[in-house]
Length: 231
Image (tube, rainbow, N blue to C red; front, top):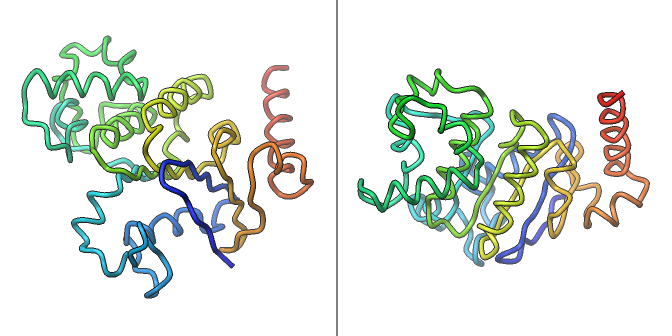
């Protein structure tokens, strides 16, 4: 009961409760789990028939748990890009960091983008790690971007800033966003709702919000939580 087509250049959002299968679904796309033959395709090719190195180059994947190296922030962001070290690469790193809204934090780092982040990024907060990973994905030329709950550690204001920048920067890329917050998915071209490994709803934010199903329940719940937080 999972059947979805994502046209090139569009955005798919995947929502659902914890354990519903959101991360598993995107893991199948990049073959972190191997799907059964003839079930998952990219550009019409079974991902099982695509060389793994080619598949990984085609998809920039930002996981829930970000892995950073014990090197400079610039090196971490540029990891996976083809740019040689130098001023041109640093300019691209700055641009990617600005879209990910990491730049406003970097100005307070003593060595800027040359700051070493420590093993697994221990000197950075959870939100800074996630934004570093987003900037890293943007540095690649991958035509497909996958964000697996990659904004969970940032506040809603910063999230909106990042999403606005991403919509402009990824206008010609295919984007898949896994998220819990409605604010992160409401602008997607299509949204699917998972329950127990099945798609139970699909549509746009406006249609699903009025449908009276699980998605509209989630919208009302998060609106109530926001109102209580304000009061």
